[in-house]
Image (cartoon, rainbow, N blue to C red; front, side):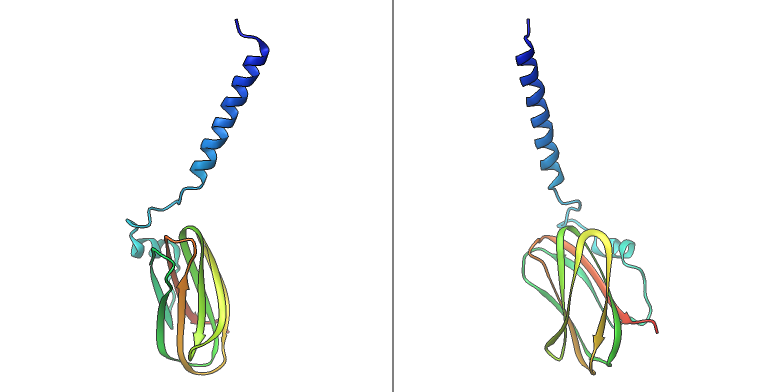
Length: 147
């Protein structure tokens, strides 16, 4: 015969075990990064755009930044649209002629993040993509801002 004290202990143990299992499963990345089909994922999450000045997508498997550059971008206002998946955040350092002009970040949950960038003059334009939360997948494009 069980007394109420041992019944409460069992109920408490069951509750603690359930909470621990939920906590562990909540920490897992939503995407298997190593096997991810980046082009297919990009097509789903990043809207198509015309007039793309610079774009990139890929996998960040370690903390090394990935840099993409285009040689000549005119001065003006641009829109950087970013997405990533896998947990954590991806960071985008935007530079013109080797000088940083903007920093942006995207939450790696498959949603879009959009920032406006002012390019002060014409020149070589680059974006360095990195994360301390690797592995993850990312995609972005830069287009002239709508007037």
